[in-house]
Image 1 (cartoon, rainbow, N blue to C red):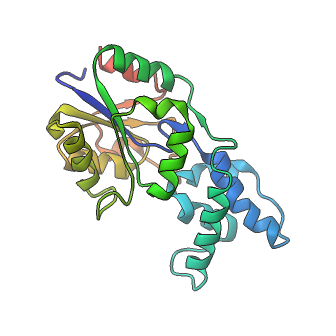
Image 2 (cartoon, rainbow, N blue to C red):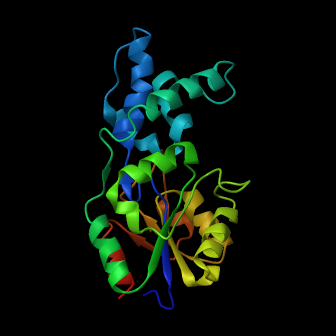
Length: 219
């Protein structure tokens, strides 16, 4: 059970929203534009949490060390910008969780590695985020998760000590960042777990397999 929590912070992709369809489509368009066959969404989904790096690895088998990576990453970004809300949706139960947090007078916000270039228009387009007290993007501070600075920035914006905040995320870097900042952490196993993931090894305080399970931990 989690006590003395004044705010709940969430990762974005794979924790609050399922953006895998639009991320996968942005990479798959690059394939079809080159005359390559389309790949099924199921191939992209596990790597959605890794953003452009994950999508380009699935679509073309390239890594950031590849000579064409930077140009292809920007092409992916442009594709994604043009279609980032077509098939992205809020996970079942998330709206209920947010409403319950507000009823309990708990603040909530987002700390994501997604760049503000995408975070801002995406969250502005989705009604869920209208009540968020803060949204920290991957380039809001000089560091991204797993560095704790984005977590500290969110706490500062909320006017709270980090230890009064809970962080929920679906990637090991989320838990590493939250713990380094002195926050309690919850690992979400319903998100994008990537390849060969052992969620128990992340060291989170607690685990949930659906968004609504968080409410029982805060009871």
